[in-house]
Amino acid sequence: MKKKRAAIWMGVALCVAMLTGCGTDKGTDAGTETITETITEVGTEAETGTETETVNGEEEKGTEPEDGSNPAGDAAEGADTAAGQDGASGSQDAAKQEGAGQEAGEPVSDGDGTEGGESATLRIGSLKGPTSMGLVYLMQQAKKGETVDRYEFTMTAAADELLPAMLSGDLDIVLIPANMASVLYNRAEGDVSVIDINTLGVLYAVSGNEKIREIRDLKGKTVYMTGKGTTPDYVMQYLLKENGLTASDVTLEYKSEATEVAAMLAEMPEAVGVLPQPFVTAACAQNEKLAVVLDLTQQWAAVQKEGGSSLVTGVTVVRNAFLTEEPEAVDRFLEEHAASAAYANEYVEETAQLVAEAGIIDKAPVAAKALPECNITYIDGEEMKTALSGYLEVLWEQDPESVGGGLPGDGFYYVR
Image (cartoon, rainbow, N blue to C red; front, top):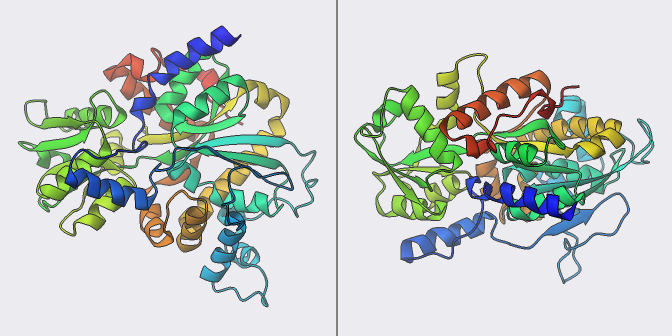
């Protein structure tokens, strides 16, 4: 079994480099160092340690600072303050639920762990980025005992910390890049299923050139982006082709890190760079001449048209063994995940405070700017299957290895 898991992991590890916006850069010149400092302030995977938090009355590991303060408790208090709640007129959650209902984050239980059936423990792994930003409200609810089930949340700086834990059975559910989920499915011989899409495209073209308004406007220009053979590369190549442009029309210059692209833009604002969030927010904050000129998610939708696939960044994957053992708990998680994502989109300021307290982005005001551009979402069922399968097919046509050598079958998609 250990040999099998090792072989699976070796295959999956090949796709870690396809992450958009993960990892840190020490900087190779002054411009890169400046951007790197800003990105670190924004909180993009600057911390390399793994944080695990067990909620609903169990021990917490690696989440409390040495001074004895309680980040999760501070997060809840900060969110209440931001909402203008004085404590005399009821809780923040009650106020939100009255106006928004379940979609905006209504608790699914009264905190006694019994409502809705027998409770279970779910071990959830996610990256310090948009996927975890869509989970922070659920983390808060679980911390307060307002979920049926107990949750253990693990946030890491890179997927290569999550995937071995998934393969060994130490995690039940992980939130990872879409193409990596396909690789995992192929290498694990179908032992996992995708249960929802949690993040749509987070890629944007950034420039100081206001004349760029559509993909065709890139003709004759140089576009800076992260490494060849990564997700941003596949997306850009596809969009150029679908808009009638060839490799001779646009020069794609590849950099190893998103911080290098951001540094190039700081020096040459008229250049065009393709960046993921929250690097986009940091780059624009560094140079007021820069702005988003193309939303690649919108460009993808324009090509695919109504009923087509979506540009997908992150998906949620479950071990099939756990799904078989605890199907009701998985379904409850899906409901709570949907509510948490809706809350993140509707209550940006409150979510930004929670994001900062969770250590995903250091400062709440910066998190508030980045959140609306992170395309946090919740899509499941047949809509998920249509959106994701079409996206994976585009990647497969460009490079079969980008999805693990083959397209997943119907068994990959969990449809309730």
